[in-house]
Image (cartoon, rainbow, N blue to C red; front, side):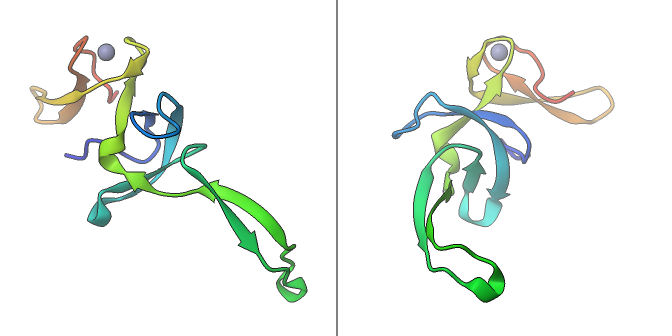
Length: 106
Ligand SMILES: [Zn+2]
């Protein structure tokens, strides 16, 4: 089971955005990377292309970062936490917060 899924709230653990919380926009499982809204912003210089309606200049967008750099956010603990997996009686697996034991999947 994936530790982090698209749409999750996660907290950045390391780097210039450490402590920042954001929503996972994309997971790239093959590369073990995630794209988190508002985190790990990079500047891109774009050339104007009038035919495509693209204005030139500097655009900021999110770059992917290593999955190990983020922790799932637990709303009960109000911070990024390590998670575990619990198997429910009906066989479903849910992710739980290792700190408080709350399920992160409803
Ligand atoms: Zn918790």
